[in-house]
Image (cartoon, rainbow, N blue to C red):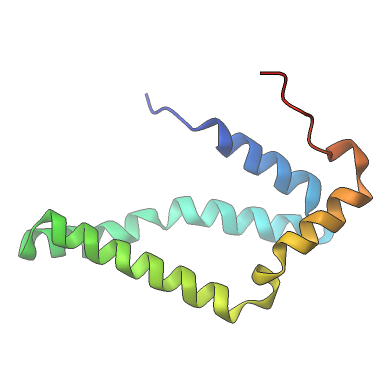
Length: 103
């Protein structure tokens, strides 16, 4: 049995609340596609691990992930402004304001 991170549930909840109804299906399909496309990465990484060893394969996959993330961030104005968009969404829906922790 796999153990899921509680943050996974919060991500889904936040998406359901903050994403407009008109595009929520598209956003959820992209989120689900990330799970479905994961096996596609195992083939090249396992081939690299077979050829050069696991540490090199993991380092290469990590480097590709970091570079892809940076490029995506730099090319996406909406992603760079996501903090401002989240603040606006929280102001429009006061019931989503963070509750102070009592712990």
